[in-house]
Image (cartoon, rainbow, N blue to C red; front, top):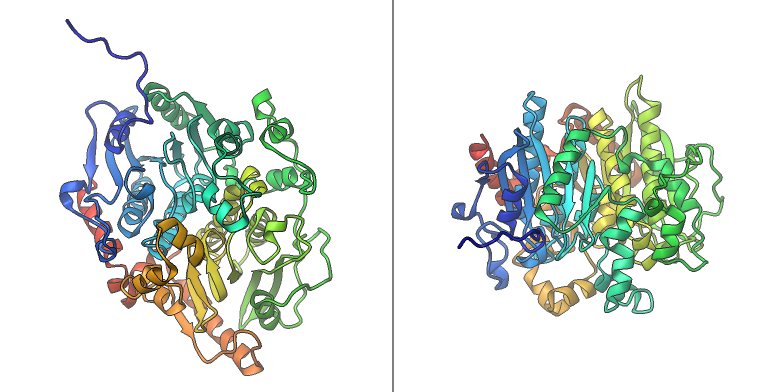
Length: 570
């Protein structure tokens, strides 16, 4: 007697390889860098953590509806789907090879299946760099072919990878899926249980669950947890082709939506669905057109911060570009023979969203950054592309219930998209780190730069999360984390450790980061001038981050993964 096949097969319950095989045409699955290649994380064993032979990411080649494809699946069962150096390099490397295929006329369909908590805290800055490279590859790929993302359930999609999800051409979710930048436990840790009770499961699903995200326009397709349904949705997404405008490009639509929200009034998931009403079949409301140079902006300079100090120092008496926000500063000036747009984020004690009052990149800030960068792209379309300098002093993204409900991951994705688009269009993009460069805020503002400069100062730090929260999530003491940082530079906070990974083009020493003098300012301007010239003549992607002397040792695993992947690709 032959056993009957179930009428429905749960996609959520499948392991990573089975998920990849289910998306690909039957019999076409071929794994790239599988477990027998034994490319394990070199950083976990140093922390007494057992590594996995594929580092929790499956990359499979095959066909989708008869066309060449690559399916990338994150395995949530290993380290919560956290992105480390090897796993991140596998994702970025696969997308980069798919981009190469498409540029050479061989259409290769890319699919990402997310089951991830974001950056793996035990590898921290390795994961942060990888996510920036993943985002860069997606923005470049979307010019040729749709990039399809799937969030089926189990872990969900959080952290920096939620920003990546916000870049996808089509995002498919099940009701069991969750999508948000800051996980409920992290928000509770950073902002308190009154802000977000991480034990309230209904609250979580009504904030970041698949049905809520679909209803409010942050996901494109809601499907049942069924292999056939998800496979069909993926195929349909490719049949529809590249959208006229990706969600992360829809700056004025989302700014218009956000402008209609009063943070002082009660707001919950059901109320937002009534406002943004996708469940009723309504589309986006017509946007209120607002160009960055035409909006009102307060004249109050507000608190002193390094971001503000350095923008004013480097721009001198240049006329500011109005952004509509006191927290986002922008000015156009010249550096040597180059026109340059400087952009910075600073604290605003009167910010209408309380969780973004200390210099964090919040909802308004993410969309405003996207606007001022895209304005430069549009204004320079027929002339020489000006340089864009992101002055980085951002303590984190904003942690809060409203931020998650209203899609802070998408606001950060819009900023990441804008910077990457500017770089790919020929704008030299330089990040100048003068203070903190933390987590999603750094991904949104700075990590898409062609070149990165940093002041060599104790107050300049790069990391994924505050030490207190990182200790809570990893179940270690702060002292234990600091001791581990001596072995694994990617989990350290100081700028020299970050520079040892190869992403920093120059550390500028001997400069007072808080009150720079005339000679110090001129020295930084001279360095910027040289760096802009190098960026203008160099590659438009982020490949230079893996060619420096420091990267050869600091990110040797990232280089090895890409080399081995190229050998097995075709």
